[in-house]
Image 1 (tube, rainbow, N blue to C red):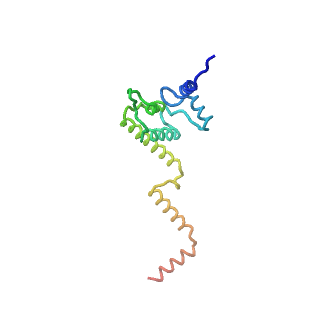
Image 2 (tube, helix red, strand yellow):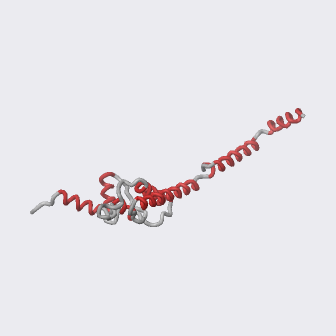
Length: 164
């Protein structure tokens, strides 16, 4: 009985792990989990409507398309695996560098929306921003004046009357 060549075995495995439409199959994600301990999740195909989806999709688009590691189409004019990865995340497949840049810009906007939701989730005292900080300082000063002992207020009032 003839045996299969090792190259045939690897080709079968990679075909089973990689989705021809882009990205990895569920078996591919499981294989990486077993081999490297990676906790890979499928791409966010629909609308990024939760903070986690905003963060994941935005960072994916920025990471892969801001500075692409290769061309978007091969010598035959077919989209490369890099370009097809956009489809796995529910985005149009870019055909050139301009399309990749549009995806990177979209990723930046998603990350900005994610950071805005994180900022709103913080308590008001911990939020950053000059206006909020000034009002917090003014509120603390007003509270400190109210807590000042009555003898200190009387002494300050006497000093003012002696000067006149």
